[in-house]
Each structure stands twice: as structure tokens, then as C-alpha cells.
Length: 81
Image (tube, rainbow, N blue to C red):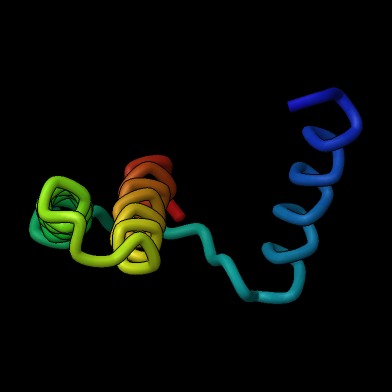
């Protein structure tokens, strides 16, 4: 990403914190973290199976997106959000 996009993402994150859309937490539950990781792996495995079977390009993208979404959630959760 270029510097402008990075600044925009940082600004968006600060705004989401201020608006309460993202909240900082001191609590960490390993079950929640592991669930995000498991969902990310499962979504990626499904995307791979759909791709290999030439089932649906649309659902390869959808499943891949969800894998990235769950991984991002796991990362943010690990950081305390």
C-alpha cells in the first residue's frame, strides 16, 4: 500500500475507536482467538476445494475473503481489540 492509503487506514481505525465500532479490551479468551483461526483455515480450505473442483469462481472469492476476514479479526483480537 502507498503512504496515502496507510494514513487513510490509520485514520479510519482511530475514527472507529472514537465511534465505538472497535473497542479496546483487557480480556483475552483463547477460545475466541482459536475460533477465528479455525474459521480462517476452514474458509481457506473450502476456497481451495472449490478452486480445485472448478465449482464456482464466485465462491472461491467469497470463501477466500472470509478467510482473510477471520484472520484479520484474530489479529485485532490478539492486539486487544
